[in-house]
Length: 115
Length: 109
Image 1 (cartoon, chains in turn green, purple):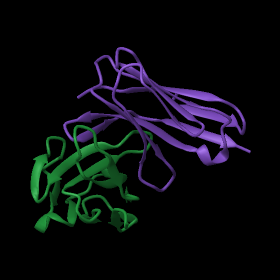
Image 2 (tube, chains in turn red, green):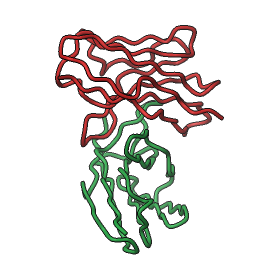
Image 3 (tube, chains in turn blue, cyan):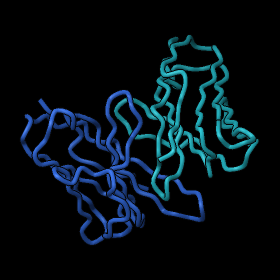
Image 4 (cartoon, chains in turn orange, red):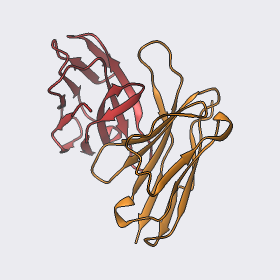
């Protein structure tokens, strides 16, 4: 079974530029998550989708970050304009909820460097 | 959001040594998951613990969940270089995960 795919793997941009990340979850997984992982920290949830609807975006900096999940499958995360503090690894995960406990499957992440 | 504290932050040991890492919270966990993240990869689930006092084993890894469900530990016996990575504990926040900062483990031959 194919895992969660993300692209690009690496991106270097200058501050105030725009950037977009793409995620393709595991087939059949209705729930998709975007996490931000700053160096030396654990992943922090940015946004959660259930099919193509947003469940939780309370920690998404909406003045510069946006995300969409058209047709309930692939998802894109955009930053416009980027700041130095956005340098991080952006992880996409998907899950198939079964009962009260579930497993999230993570992609390899996109490492963003903002200069 | 539940605050998860992991210790130690860094650990460097030689192959064959034993080690224990910890995850603590001031509030009760409904469930707790341990993930391992290798450099350049996303986290991979190792185990989920749900019941207070629960002990689970995964080859050389032993996971314990505190009786009060406020703490958990991961013990590795006879560590190997392949155990190198970032060990993260996470609690459920709805269906999303709330992660600790992790313990970075380096096992040298």
